[in-house]
Length: 432
Image (tube, rainbow, N blue to C red; front, side, top):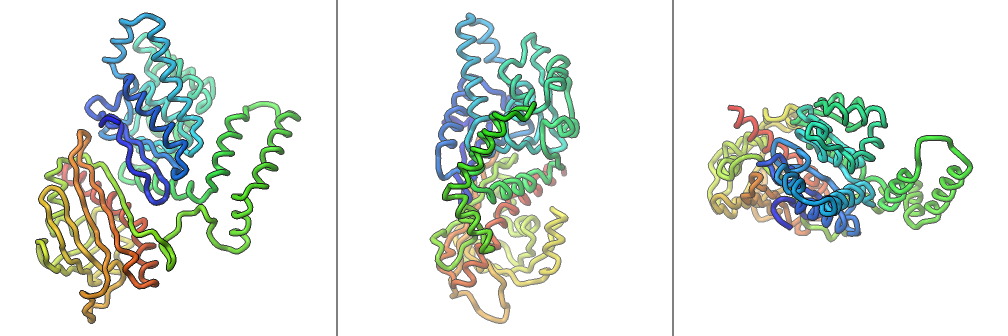
């Protein structure tokens, strides 16, 4: 797979991330990118480890639709060649729409033409207030034929026809009103909203969700005939008899989580690693400073460190409510002043920072330097779309049982939050 489509590793929850990565041309697609997306959805849709697929984009735009260079090439081809191209795009839209896993679209910026089609074909679309949408094909003398059925399904025929005829540029708020997206939030809150949606999806049975998608693809607005009633009765009768349904009912009656719900680490769990990846729209050097400089690290991390970072050193700090995110500051306030210690292991300039720590409440009166700790790594990689940051934590299996569960539970969502914080911190720096 090329750099045009980034396929992140499947995380411990079963979330797979597909990122459109052509920010220089607003993530416009051509025949090669269509082929890569088609392969990605086909592979992930069949992978039993995948629970949910998130489709996102690098840069300021979500997707500008067809690449103009590709359109020029198509204009020079005969009808047969154009038909083959169109069928490949139609196959991509179908694979997205009929993917057996829930598909969530994260729309941070503009979506035009086929980009709007991707939004309409996703099961759930969450947009930032900065997002804009236009079914713009008519302005180029063509029509939104392949994406048309998905627009009609999402918007209804009358609104779909209006947007296609006029090519109007509409706001995220209007897209929400029309039903093109289901949620609109401030750009700074977009990742948090997406994470909440993913968490909700992961509470549902994966087989039940697969049957739900199939059911609603078969249902149409119209009379509820005897055929429809029989179809729905057979669907629920089939699923009720499944192993997943039995496990779900047993968990409900016993008042514990169903077996498919991602669990925090407990006494007998074999999981030993958390990982969070985020693509940052900032140069590698700037991201490295935000991580390796104790003062900058502390600002977005919410800790006031008492000494600079250097290899093989012990650094003490105190929790200090950050100003990067008001919600985080509110959560940290009760813990302000609490001791915080890290043991720096490795600093590889512009590449990695690794430290050990106790990921649970410390008692400053006790020396715990010899107690088992987890290892945290911040690793950087330069990509065409920005700087890829991977935050990982491992070694939970070395902790005492009670602390093991406490630490994993606290940090399972914590690193996702920290990734959002550094993203906000860098954006504030860029604004001056």
